[in-house]
Image (cartoon, rainbow, N blue to C red; front, side, top):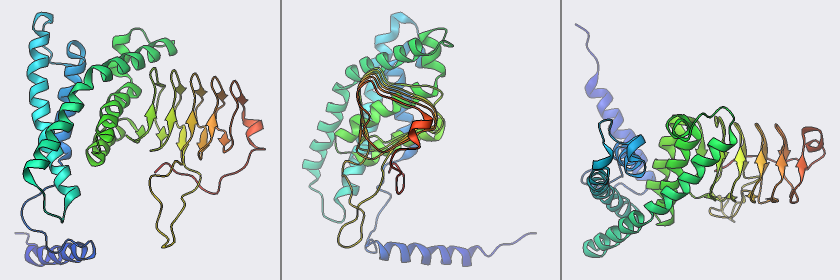
Length: 307
């Protein structure tokens, strides 16, 4: 019969955890897990998809006459589940300081109520994204096909929900919701990015949109497009300065073709067209056209990323 050094491995893992906790100032922690749950958030998002699009993403046996009943029941359950995760993030952010239970509970409830009240607006924005995908892709046969099949639309559902959480100062929950879509689609949209109505990601694999990117209305991008940072400034101690505007501003009606890399806090003017596989680090005027041969004369970046 095979045997393993379970006791020795457990002890070594214990020591590794203690080293990490000490280095992070967490050596005095006790009690159970207080982090938000990725699995719980995945279930919440699935429920919210059915709330937003009940007859297409809701239960298979749902009938039109019971649509509102399903939405009410599913929404109530999802919001109560979300409330638990919000409270976990708030407690996590407050650590190691003590939390005023009453005030924290009210703040969590207020955040979830605000999130819930934003769902009709989120549905309207998603309708514009679905319509943009249908109108922008000659291979699309129906808006239902777009909603059910297109990875770009799935990523936008997650992004629109995650962005609202981000606006409510719940960055960990927002990032988890966004990363669920990233894992499923290969599309990486930071929840802090600002994206207007009618956004269409065609094909989508490898698209990266950074935290401070600002995208206008009716913008279309193709696979492997990066809206990233050109460089990452550091402070006097050599630590990265977080939260600075470092990603592109893309104005209305811009098209960005596959493989384009756009870096830094530059502006891509309204109606511009960015060709495939170009490297852009300077402003592009409204109506401008950037092709691959032209891009070779542009300024080169010192580095790239979309953190």
